[in-house]
Image (cartoon, rainbow over all chains, first blue to last red; front, side, top):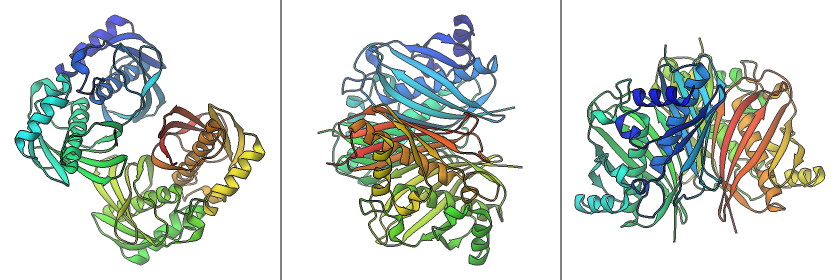
Length: 134
Length: 134
Length: 134
Length: 134
């Protein structure tokens, strides 16, 4: 999927509230998708760091793109579960999100998402399970 | 904590992007906090159901209120991990969120969050771990 | 399911290594199953507390019983994921395990497991997802 | 840590029930530890595949070795949480387990564990959080 296809996918699929994060595609192929979360003060809680809710939304969204890219196009799916660990606070800078399909089953898709701060350090890690709907 | 105290807490602590969900307090005491997520079309993805990202943000936020209520006031904390299972799609109606502290340790707080649709059926379940910061 | 039916199920289904834990049934109905893990020094690591591996095995096993009871008999299934939090160390005494089906879907079953020490305090909490196989 | 050091660690630390799995060290350095789980019929449930309880115990054990190796020696620690996904059944053959420290914090250690079947395919994936005890 090229940038245009991903942007079109996100515009069509995402809830407006999630779309307002402004996530953009960096690249996507059969194995993984990389997205960028542009920094904004709107994303920080009172502690001055990007809040966990933003990272969860970004991880889930990047995984949907990765699965669509692996399938050669978006198909209806639903998130079954998402487990996320917050390892390092991010005060500023864009965040790079890499989502990877670990196992594409017939019904279930398992994935892993890594989020990196602007210095390339892993800040957040997530694993996900999706169900493909007929 | 009464409604005013919770509203003041959310206004002060939450990132603007999360605050825009419009979560409101129903009740909070030492053991649990109950919040309401008002329905909005902005929260639905193209499949016509409230998206997972909204539930994750609501669960995390409700847990922060529950911990603050259990501690007798907000203290700096950070989410260590959040595990969420999406059991039932929600097409419409307000969502009720109940967050409960399972174990208040010296450094770590374990919690559980249940989200119910307007018919009272559990739609989403989450478990969380927070670290209290000095 | 009565005690005999559960014992027969565990004898038939469990791997010998898991069976050696000696888990016994307390009760099981359509909504939940309660099991007992008899204390043994073999279950403690060098820190003198029951090791996490034991609790994970007990949680998974109790959930299988709960699902079988909810279905009115054992059907082939596979664990999709298990998330477990260790909240309190257990030095001694039997452990009581309660497994509950949160949502019985057509293909996926979501559950929750609570493990209590001999004083009735929750020591471990787990959530699980299983896939029913045709 | 060399093989002897790891074997000595496992003999000293593990509960006898876990030790009976016969996990052996392949290698361990500051970044990761690789272990081998020797196949045995005792590990299979009635469906003829290695049961999830075995993989959970192996993942947790490998992570303890990885953390000890990263710290330059074993220090008292406790598992805070473990999330595991079962992606592919394993009917036979040794299993290779690779545990990696993602983030060594002052109090908390985050890690990731991958388990591969004898054909090198990832069968199970886990993420873990440990607390270091003084």
